[in-house]
Length: 411
Image (tube, rainbow, N blue to C red; front, side, top):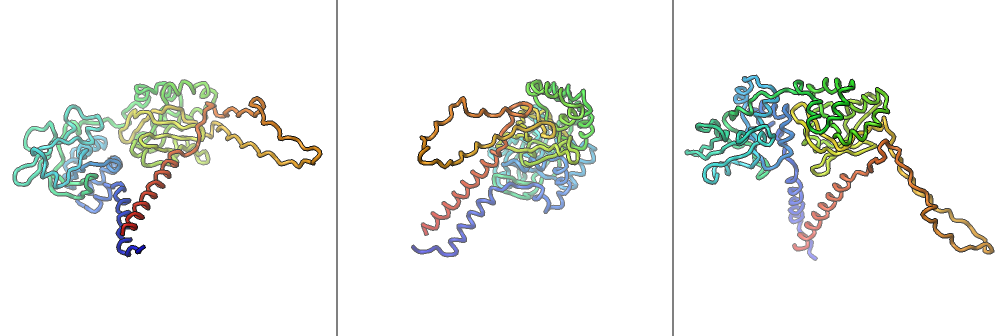
């Protein structure tokens, strides 16, 4: 068999590398970092945590405004929460590069924005109208805007086909709804929010504890709260009442993380996280993991799944859980049953030779020990998500090698 040339081998390796690189996510912060005229826009994408949401999405267009345009916006003295709404109105949930902008079917297109996706926009106020104008110009305006398009397409900044397009527009898109005053987290009643979304028992328990002040004190700096749903909390209350006063406070604070984490952040930042109950040697940590679209919060005792978003307004996020989080500092994990010892070989004299003993009946077999955890149903700690990932990675590697081998054999 004729061996392939070095150029052929290099081409195959390059194709595999390009395939792997193509699957990597984009990073809007890095894209804009090379363009100093958009430094203010880039700064507020990070400050409002929109950058993380943009990075996890695909098939989007970011309409960036230069520093002068951002100065006009900042002169309005809007809160950071309102600025987030305004900037989310500049992220289109479709891909528009320079070529597509100039070849719009029927001369106009309506694009949904990230502001529309938040559910805060009413009617068509979360949509942007794109119009192909005379003289090679492209105009952008809110869907409910009357008059000539207030913003124009200036130039393309970066294009990763059908993944992300970053374009410059001439000015901030006006939107009364996006610029409407947005209440800050300190003005929100945490327990009322929880009670209204199926976590009333947890909220009432929190009201009777010093832990409530711990949550309140952390809101402005950023906090993420996991509140067990009513059915889970009701089932757990008898065990909760048996805890000491300090233990009750620690358990409640164990359901909070001292940083803001949107659902996209939780999906991308898996691993150990300290909680509001963490105190030096008393680690009180949880493990965040995601399996596809599901996000789980794991302890040594139990694995709980996020069932719904109660509120997600920077810097406050509250999510409901299907189980109460149980820290190992307060509860005993169920012991893993030890494997049965192998039977020892016994030397037998010829004159006392006997047939092999009959296997023990089910009634004689040792019963499994009951779980020592407080709920008697501690979850298996096997990292199934990692197993699935490793299996997928192995399959991908095998496919790549198979592809390369077939190419080489055809040469």
